[in-house]
Length: 73
Image 1: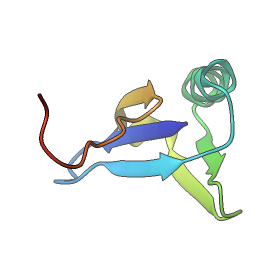
Image 2: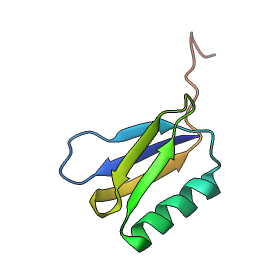
Image 3: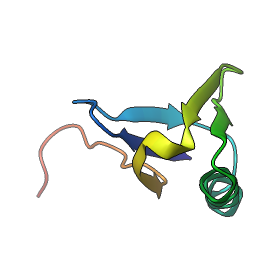
Image 4: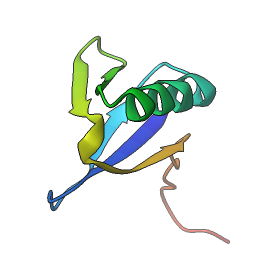
């Protein structure tokens, strides 16, 4: 599952590929923002990403788009 996190005052977004479900990621974001703590996500390689919830501008949760190679007919 691909998760994009926009951070306030940062020109680029954070992109995380995680094994969590969309519902689980949404629950983690809601809890972090509601409590004013940090959002902690673990990517598919086991690395942790920690973002202060107060600085989150947006979170986009999606499956990612598979690119196509070659010509389409």
